Length: 177
Image: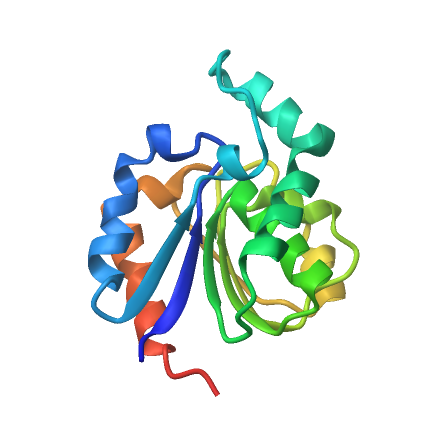
């Protein structure tokens, strides 16, 4: 039986996620993939499809709605999560609320800088060196978490080479103990 891999989109949701195939194509032979559109989970109104509008809705209750829905939908304990940007914040809070020990890969999840506790499990963080909202070094020390900085901007995850790099790391660790 294949391990389950949950993918949580960034704040744009599935509508702007053509790049996602770089991950799903590379991972589908090793994992049972379940995709969640973060906008749908958070009940974000995408009528005004602008970053500021979407972001405001996530921050003003959307993240909590998404976490609650994820807790109801996901009952398995041995899940791996691959989350992008706001999806990483949703994954983090889901892990905290469900108290599950998960393996999480969070990419460009800059809102994590506001978190003061970390969930159980193994957490792998990736940030762009040019993203001005990356948590400060003391946050990583306090959380006792390593992270990898890569060249690029906040949306580094749309880059095919970066996707290949992350997928190889996930596949190489798929037999988690």
